[in-house]
Length: 112
Image (cartoon, rainbow, N blue to C red; front, side, top):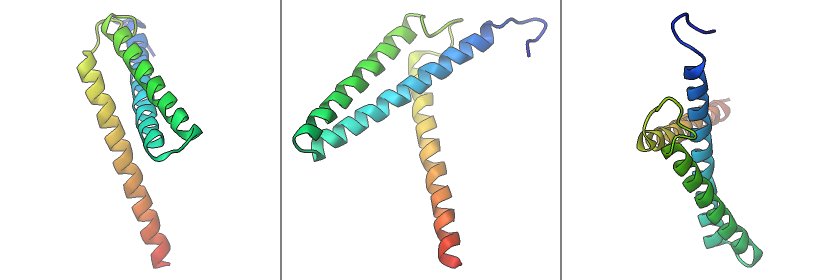
């Protein structure tokens, strides 16, 4: 579990990076859902959409601030821009993987 020359600091740091990426992806999807709901919704739905948008912005900015100032970045891991880039790559990889899986599923269902 731990190597002889290191400590648990590396594991803790990667855990905080995981939490930061998780929260950044959460914030991004809240922003996207808020924009979609505020634009296409009506009445109470628009209010909910604006709430999602503002909530996503608050969470994203808070995580960025905490990461930049060291609270979520123990042992001085990657920069905030690198973390944002990794978050976007994770989202793109997940979407591509899901689309490929759905495509294979549909081809298998249609052929049978």
